[in-house]
Image (cartoon, rainbow, N blue to C red; front, side, top):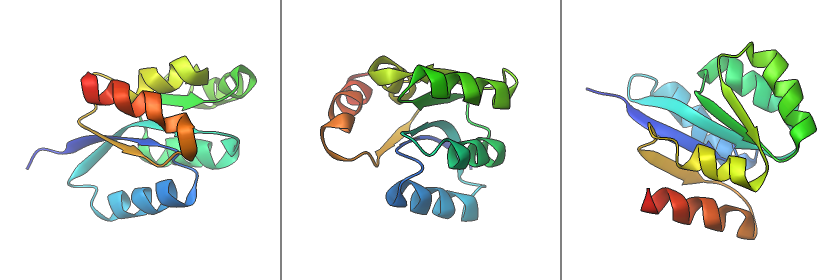
Length: 115
């Protein structure tokens, strides 16, 4: 069976963490291609080490610089709303799970649906 490629928006929140836990139990069925996080950069770096996504979005550029040093160029790291849209519409994404709070996830989800 071919793995489904998934993006988790809000991967460090409770819904995102739960989704990644399920994915971890079904690694034969899913490939994480994208993650996004707000402020919990330490947990995001742990998730990057475990799931090795192709793309990651964070809110602030200064956090993106920190994450870039952690990934050694293996993962595309972007920041801000445009970065969130870029991860949500990643060409390899087949499933996008929006675990963001409130309005923050509306535009990325809409754009992912249209892509």
